[in-house]
Image 1 (tube, rainbow, N blue to C red):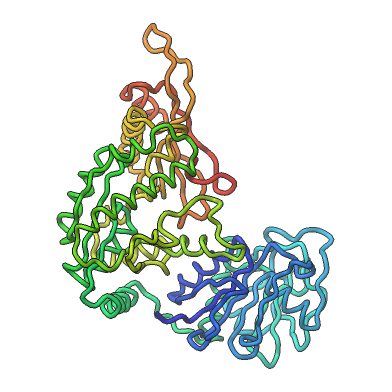
Image 2 (image 1 turned 90 degrees about the vertical axis):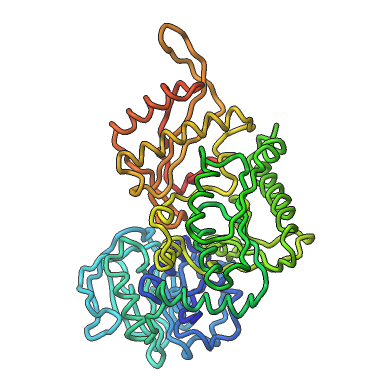
Length: 509
């Protein structure tokens, strides 16, 4: 894999967006914490310093070691990065009178600057900082201003170093991608060779070399990530790939058999293991969300270990880990596992003596789908909504019983089938139903009822890091609510979740 661009993370919520915008230019990039990046920078063609919630004037300000970067590699400093270069290189950064946050427009652009090729004055940019650069660093030249920010952009003469106080990666910076392209392609001369086809060719070659004639076992989930990982591995090692699909009893209605049927036509060696009763037995009486996740993870490993022992001389475990999982697990502030446990990052118990192979660990979700399309995987499978590893357990608030699972499976089926029949499924990134731990009073016929409440959730997103609730048509919500209450015994009330992420998460647990 050609590294090409190194992005240093200072803890900004926007760092992943920078990476996504760079990838959209068909340029491969990697994110590393500012204080823990590769010592060998020879593979990299350019470096980007990201933003940060910290102030460069604070005692806890992140201090990157740029001695091997400045003046040696093309450097773009964004927001915190721009202020860092100014503050510690002869300039001045001071607190702004008012927090500079939101839309702004460029009121001045220095003529003849490649960085601003194709960008006109008054172009909208997005500010997000409470400090501002009051004096430029040594040998710096002003490139752009807004009405409120004199030094919105500058460059340092004698170096290929550029700095901007706004965020080109966010949607609100209308020419942001153009500026990134100007810097990376025209100034830094980074090749635009990161395409799905190139990734497949290179990864299959790497897998052949790494795995040789070894046997590999892969836990399929029926989702996009594990399926694409399986097809990549199958192209590399063929019959030496053994896929196991475990039914944990918490899948969608009829999903276990449906997924097995889907894989039949793909040439994969797949074994289905129905362990639903074992999982539900272990989960009995558990209400805490994190305990649920850990219990499911533990039982899955036990079941998977039992099955993998039936394969002689297996040496590798393949996983469908993707880049957001990796970034969330190794961040500037340490593992962000306090949000929730990732079951597929962090390795295996000591007693499972398998090496790990993760062919998708450097891809975002949308990139995984494009790679899948290049591999010829069925578009319907690639278009499947993400589904949580712990399944419906984290959509049943409180303890889990077979009866609750049955109710939620039936509700979920009505909702998802409704989205498909109304032509809404592909307009939604993820959808599902949540069984709430409350009963409500209702009237059915002439009788008073006291039954379950379900919440419906539908969000739009690109990678799940941020998400907005979807404005589903009122007529659709009315119809699906009516169908759920009439068709699913035990439910008498349906509500719709209109929370975005952040501050809420996509799942309720």
